[in-house]
Length: 255
Image 1 (cartoon, rainbow, N blue to C red):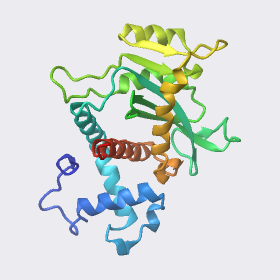
Image 2 (tube, rainbow, N blue to C red; image 1 turned 60 degrees about the horizontal axis):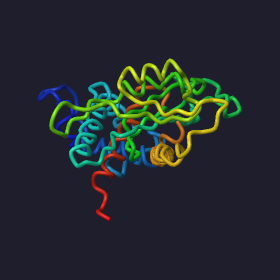
Image 3 (cartoon, rainbow, N blue to C red; image 1 turned 30 degrees about the vertical axis):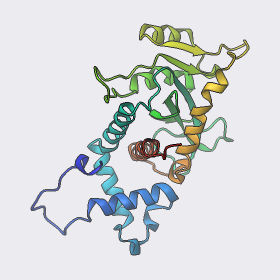
Image 4 (spheres, rainbow, N blue to C red; image 1 turned 120 degrees about the vertical axis):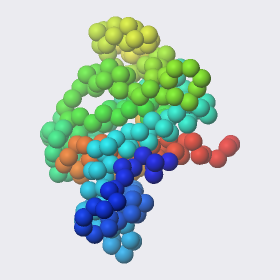
């Protein structure tokens, strides 16, 4: 699925022959799963050097490979009836940023350690639709509309591609009347608890799947702690991880 998305090499490019794309992808996956530093990627595994894999990751991110892969897998899930458009869940999770970089600040929830925040929207079944990385002090409510509008158009069914869920579920961190108005204007029902009032009954039982998806994302050790100073490279690994979660859901054994 990835190979047709990769940019081609010039037939007579100068210099030594590049490491095959498949081996570089395996090296990137090795780093994503284990969290090992790029410079410590073992050469005996045959994936090329860490710098080679890092530069290939940069090249593929520039051409949008991982975002397109994620969209293709979402379409496959949609065609299989695995996407639940009846509702979407939004939430955010803090990650420590060891080396700083773009979109990092002293975190107000981690003793002022440098950190970032992952903002996530999933479908009703916990499948990741969009992730946005911001500085750790960005309020969750400010990213509500960006998450909703960032959901890609998903094909796979007869008719126009779909990108709007019927409802958006959020906790009190997303309480905002202007956002409710904008969601309704988009044809989406806001199901968001209000501050100072009891939680909406049964909301927690529907939203736990977004927490489960965060757990799946942060099982990739390179994402549990942010090491990339450059935001676009960190986002490339996040998009690849979302694609892998979709791939697992698509290929999970029948019950």
